[in-house]
Each structure stands twice: as C-alpha cells, then as structure tokens.
Image (cartoon, rainbow, N blue to C red; front, side, top):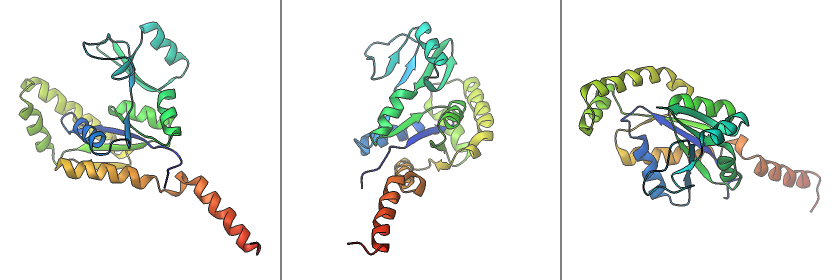
Length: 213
C-alpha cells in the first residue's frame, strides 16, 4: 500500500542515548524509506561538506530573512552559529510520501510540534541513568566536568519527555532500531492519516447501499 503522505518523525534524546546511531542504522537498513532532513546553517562549510547534502549554507542575513518569513519549522543558535529546519524542504519530501526524520534537541522538537502538530515525537533514552553515565564516560572524549554538565542538562530535558508520543529504550541497538521503524510504519495506518483511503471505501459502499452495479 502506498502511503498518502510521509510522516515527519522527530527523534530526540539525552546526549549519549544513541539517537544518532539509531538514525544511521535506520537509513542503512531501510534504504529509500527514510530521509534525514537537511538543516540550514550560518556556519561555514567544513572540508568535504557539500551544499544541500550536509547543510544548506546561509549567510546571517539570509538566515534572518528566512526566520522573518516563517520558513523554519524550528531554529536555534549555538556558539554564535544558527541552525534551522527549512519547512519547504521537509514538506516537499512529505508530499511525495517520504518519511522524514529530524534528529534535534528537545526545544527544537517542541517548536516543530507547535508548527506541525502532525509530527511524531520519539524520545530515546538508555534503560537507566547509570547506563547513560557509563556511556558518556565510555566515550573517553570528555572531561568529568563536561560529563557532569551533560548529565545536568539531561536531568532538565527529562521534564519534557511526556511531551513525546513514544519512549524508545535504547538498551540493545538492533532492537531499538526495529522499534523505531515499527512505530513509524504503524503510524501510517492511524485513521486520521488515511483520509483518501477512507473516503474511497465510503464511496464504494454508498454504491452498494444504493443497489448500483
């Protein structure tokens, strides 16, 4: 069955929860099924990055004009550089029946939900806070101070988990990837997403009810 419209899925989670890894596996294991949204940014391209692949690179003036015109589903600024999700790019993919994934933080996810209520919000977490701490320590790339800061941020983010439709426990990666895939695909069959199919069935039944051939 061809879906009438793609689903916009927002994937958030604590730093170290593995949301980025889940997205990479989704794209690899289900090619042609999922598309990762490309963000616009005011930062300069890094070596090897291409326009429209990693990012849409914008000047500060261009980015601010897009904000003014309401062209972002969400945007935020980090360390003086701005990042945003272009509405037109996402809606074009959705209209073609493509499932689009946004991997963004909590505040951005809530912005998306406000502007696009039909978005599906998934929150990724390890099974326990201790598991999260061990993952951060296990990276071996951050100081104890940075790890403590990340855990503090996670504590604040936990206050918003109930704003999401689904909680994904990333204990075993393969299972978490499958769960995310199943959730998204099941969402396609919610009645409110199948308006055309429902209308078609109703019209066919009306013909039978009238006794027409």
